[in-house]
Length: 111
Image (tube, rainbow, N blue to C red; front, side, top):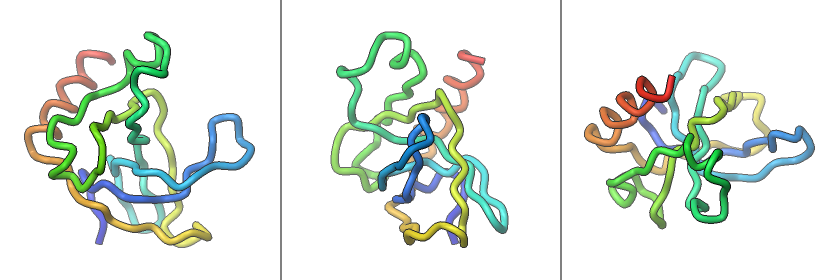
């Protein structure tokens, strides 16, 4: 059972609406039919300063099961369907309690 704080691998559609790709995402809300997630990316320096202002750095990214230094993109919440998703959803790991606490502080500060 996937829960809040879990890092999953799921097919996520692009913001432009055409296509998408499999990527890591952080579960922030989980109910019977959906996951509400934030995308996780390792592409920090290729983004504009405006986009980077929405990125939260995971300090314990290896503990979360990620392969590279990673950032939570809090700029947009992504809805992932649990059962209608044609691609399987895998649990990669869970972010540390420290990172979860720091993420909540970051979200309060940027709200």
